[in-house]
Amino acid sequence: MAVQESIIQFRRDPLRFLDQAFPAAGDTLWLPGRQLCVAGPAAARAVLANDEGLYQEHSDFFHTRRGTFGPRSVQVQIGRSARSLLNAYLAAHADELTASVRRDLVPASEWPDAGNWLVYRHLAAVLVAPDSPVRLRRMVDEIVERAVLAGARERQSRLRRAVFRFRVARELAQAVKQRRARGAGQPADLLDVVAGAAGPDSLVADLAEVFLSFVFAVAGSVGFTLGWSVYLLGTNPPTDAEPAWVVREALRLWPVAWMLGRRPARPHHVAGVAVTPQDLVVVCPYLVHRHPRYWDDPTSFRPERWATGHDQQAYIPFGWGPHTCAAASLSLQLVEDILRTLLDGRRLTLTSNDHRPCVGPALAPPRFRLSPVLHSAAMPNERR
Image (cartoon, rainbow, N blue to C red; front, side, top):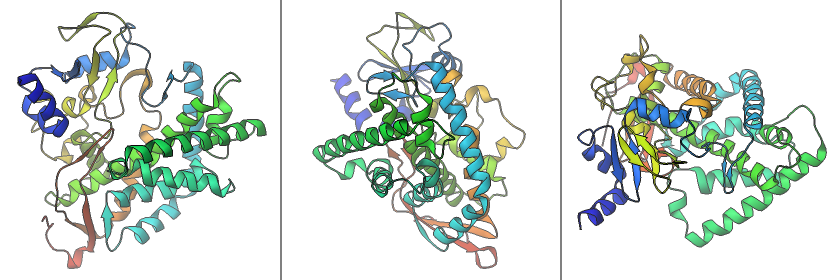
């Protein structure tokens, strides 16, 4: 009965379950379904780095239905090409970002969707070039609407989700096939990067899934990081903290990628606990980032803790080891730039009827309304 109650509690409110069980359980705790949750920083890094080959090859970004897309050399090639393209694009469109923030987020906006749409619309042209077929560009818009936004999946029936996944897989595979048939050249967008980097034996279905990872990373991960940064600024006392500190602290408290699963390749011990290939080892950045042995006042929003840097050994918002997010620094810089523009001469007032995170594959902020006001007319931060 106790086991059944634990399963119900975890499925109903996984974060509350983790908060109640940790840190009394120590650096690891068993979750329902033979999942060993890892909260200790050293053990978490060892699992993700996988230097001893104790886990089946896995990449959260390059994961497809058939397993991990590879080889590793192709993953690295895609990462380098994507960073180069994104760097050039962001540098060339900095003024447009400033204009978009002022137009879309001032005077009021509904979050977290506003953050997702802002980031996506700013980077839509680097995901799929403007001269691509209208059908393809509309498909990517629809992916964001129906699969990326907080709670989007729960607003649709299982049948509708299945039909949509089939349509997305078919149309993206066709787009990849057309790009590959066009031949090599300077990549115009991230779809070109994916289509052009793989060898001739790569399946277009796998390449389509890798491109989908880019869509989820841009509109989802970066958008939710912006949402958490804004939410924490609006629900805490005013601070003069640098935007960079705010973003890092937001990712510490609410890492978007909050559960990273790895399947053991053979029996071994994790932080003294025996696991087998029948188990799943789950690294939990949410708990690693709140570990009381490594963080002072771990559950409080204190962006000033980053003023002099911090021990990065207990900070893994982008993973760890060879599969760390290739565009982590670009993502941080983009969110910092948006915050800096949003906060220019303004104070953030925020109203929300629900302060519970939206828990899914990504950890999204609760819904709230943001009303930036000029400092001269600013009132204290509001919470309802």
